[in-house]
Image (cartoon, rainbow, N blue to C red; front, side, top):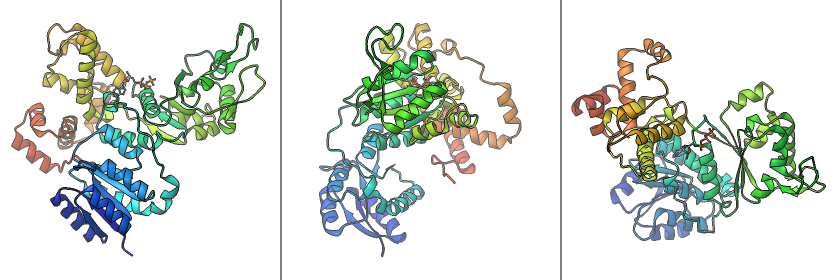
Length: 454
Ligand SMILES: Nc1ncnc2c1ncn2[C@@H]1O[C@H](COP(=O)(O)OP(=O)(O)OP(=O)(O)O)[C@@H](O)[C@H]1O
């Protein structure tokens, strides 16, 4: 039996082209020009999957998503939109959207998503969760900046985990935003009315960490002159963020494992167990798998913590986010320092894009702060941008020797196009070639804004 897919879009041309594509792929198609009609069809004809536009008059795609889930909690919904919006992506995933696509639609990716959505329909009964309460206004787009495909994957995971309490392990180099992501998860979902408590496991001496985490009773040890609640207790039903977890001593790793297994802990010197209600988010900038292999981090603890894993990409792997981050930080820093640096020369932006940012977003923010402090006019001047090391290292030269000139050109054009989000008018100027030449190079090298994964 062919599966039924309901397409809801107020744009007739999109409805028709989606309908043709779906029929050609062997599905039965139902069409609705607005959310209200779509919901009526859902009631009467029980489709297996809905593909809905987000921006529609009266009922939006998010409204359709929420109401459809009330009618059929196990329906799969793929949302499409013309606008790239972090908040909407997270909201859509929170309300249980199966996936989220931007126009123009990438048909190959859409086809795969449809197949997967239909395959997982029978499993979804266990996965779908309702969100009854309105989420407090939390302006995510002001906090996490980035529209690269790698960051979009992260936003989807945030949406999927913010309304449950699964344990999360975040890895990523220093300054990639691990704490920021942990806070965003906390403040986007059911934990947001409870405390967010962060502990840096490497900053606290080993002897103190246990009482810091679990608290201590009065008289538990010399100097314990009063009862002190630990971070787990203070976090209540909120989130405890264990940063630099790889630095935890073996004995404390064993204690933490027991807490995770038994969901309870004792204060140091205490005699009764306290129920653990907080969600744990652990993070490290070390290669944790390697530490596990070397026996430096308990494997059983790692598996307990790594229920959902989030790997934050280094900034150099999402260079297209650099211009956005530069704008965001300049606005923020200008405000804080009462400055008005508004002009970013093309060569300065190119330099920032090409730099490898070992310290990631934190380093970028620091470099920009320094540049704003040093600037005396409204231009972000090159001489005020103090980078840690020269751009061309020996390593880079070695890599270049092994690729052809054409490959090098292709890579460079692609890097610039990604960095300016495929704005060809900007790209041809940065590259110093004419617009027609840029088009012909895109054609020759078969460049595309969409990376196909094997
Ligand atoms: N995508 C982003 N958008 C905006 N700001 C960001 C982003 N990622 C990181 N930042 C900012 O960069 C700084 C460093 O981020 P954060 O402390 O979360 O990194 P981290 O990975 O936890 O670092 P470390 O491993 O050193 O503890 C913070 O000021 C944070 O707000």
